[in-house]
Image (cartoon, rainbow, N blue to C red; front, side):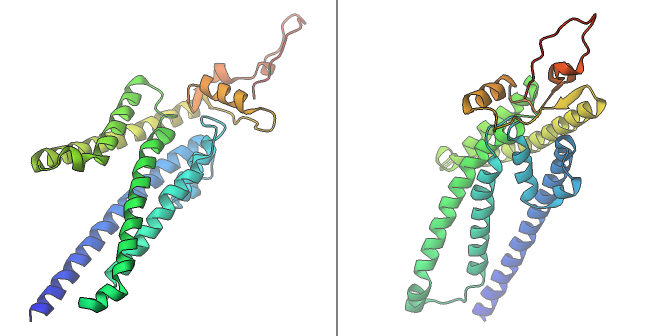
Length: 265
């Protein structure tokens, strides 16, 4: 009787966890897709690609390469997010579907697998946390081109770091830990609103014709030092006023005067 009750309770808890996980993943997907759609409008990428999970984020990083960042950070994103998440998800699925076995048989058949799986989950979680901090700047710094927006980004990055060590900082103090968690959750919503506003604002500037997307650098004709220098001079901004980015050869010389032309890659 008690075994049936325990099994029923475990099934109910598992169902609740799956439903909550599905809701979180679904809303995360919707938010990412909408943000990607806005960014694809700016980056002149086919809008339908914004609804492909993982690829939409990868494509944003790919389009950043040569415009604001030297490397394609999408590769790091796939390696450090998609692959660990797939491994962790697979392990959780296997764990949920393990038969209930106790005693020596459990130790012989599953103990080593569980230990290795937990080690993979811990390492994967650490890797994801570190790159989550780095990719905050890679993703949002190019569109946070005002002082106020960048301050919001720095605060979010600081809260991300604190959350990594919250177990050590607030150990034994449940009240402070809960207050921090609630505060971080509220600020994450604020941060989400700010980055949607920033992306929408930049799209509006580009559509108005007053701003233009930074051109990609030609890596075949520039060495590493030149690429670093140009990208640094751009101040990591994705779009700039048209007057700054307009090539000089678009202007016609007056009074037949010779004009020295400089081509900007």
